[in-house]
Length: 100
Image (cartoon, rainbow, N blue to C red; front, side, top):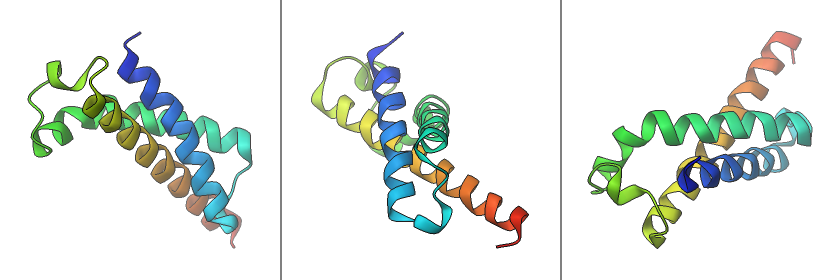
């Protein structure tokens, strides 16, 4: 398992829990926030990474993997933001279904 994926998954869990803490009305509990954050962080990093990285001026996967500090920061940001966004979307959908 590549180090960038691990960083994205952990950052996604943190991002999901931070989003849940910041938005109390859509908080789904720490376990569900973490699971949704992990999924969102991994999906953002792996699926959208090839689209986002060239926009940031990073050429391909060679520049965005390994222990390069910029690559680590990129993985943390992609995972954290993706995890927070997916958790927030799930919380909003849950609220809509529940009629809140």
